[in-house]
Image 1 (tube, rainbow, N blue to C red):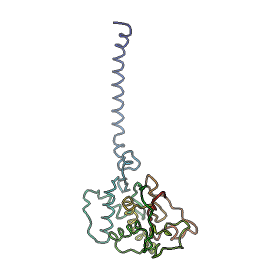
Image 2 (image 1 turned 45 degrees about the vertical axis):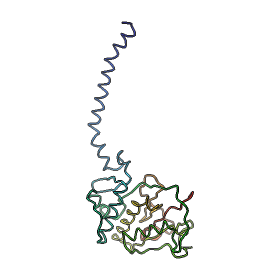
Image 3 (image 1 turned 120 degrees about the vertical axis):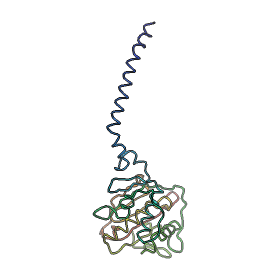
Image 4 (image 1 turned 90 degrees about the vertical axis):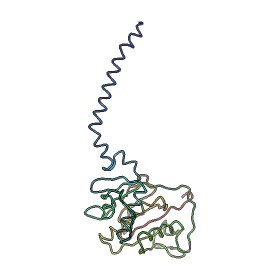
Length: 255
């Protein structure tokens, strides 16, 4: 046996020992960290939760949903709130349905967020006789089917030309305001029920923004979380969107 062959022969047991030690270290780490990694499915910010389309904050922690589950859950909760028949939700955790129906404990607020998809191939649409574009009309129709008749504003036949910010999407018929007046905890919870439904259905309805109760959601923010809304002066209930949900749709084209 040559000297180099002898050296290789001697190194093999060392390599085997190192491999055994590394595997043992990995196994020990998994035994220690395993529960916390699995807990990430319901704890918010965990590595597995990052793959979910939507997240619901519940009393038991964050729960990830795919988009179809989020659409089903938010629709069922809305229909049941008005005494209408809803689809079977036996595959949805009851804690999720309770959170969507009741909101966070102690006060009204957001409990559901979804990733924001943007279809880059949408065509620009013209305003119709109703004062809304076809995409915005689709949102109005879909809301009515689930929530019934609502107190709507922010558009009019022929369009609106004042009453909103300079660059407002209301002026080109892409926005709808849904009013929940007077401002109360009950009406705020109802507004959040609608807001969650809109976010869950944002992909199929080409929704761009949802604004309500000092918070906004944007399809253009990849993580899809709710963010504080910086209302312009004088920051009253209307400008803060406390008394109404604002929803607008994508323009299309190169935006």
